[in-house]
Image (cartoon, rainbow, N blue to C red):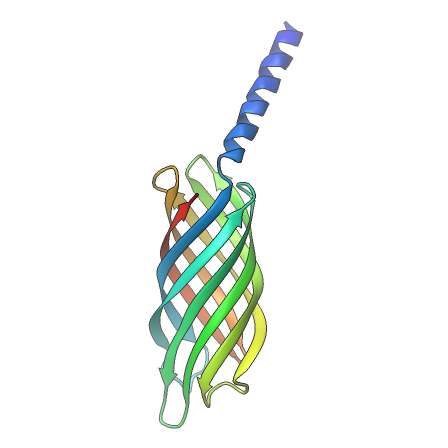
Length: 166
């Protein structure tokens, strides 16, 4: 009896590893973003877009690259317009078969026009958190919140996007 239960538990654990293996692969996605700045001298919000691609090793770990239009902010004497190329690691936690919570940390190379940022280009930290929902087997939607440091300015980015896993 004990041997049969142990064999059954071993079979179930092998099947769960197969389920995790189905959640890996290359993915592409795009979405709309709302970006806010912490600089009180600039208008505080703009809408923009994000395009991303990555590789999910399993349900827990993915590596992702993205291009983000950082939007345009202005005031009487200050203005800012920027773009960012990002590389980040996502650490995920599946909840059931369709939902995945994740945190991300990485770096982004940014290019800014205008006089609000101290430099015109730089590489800084980016970090955030989000949730993914698999609508179908290989198609999902994502909501995420990220903080991007751009020189002395922190940009808070909220993104709603869709992705396709290959």
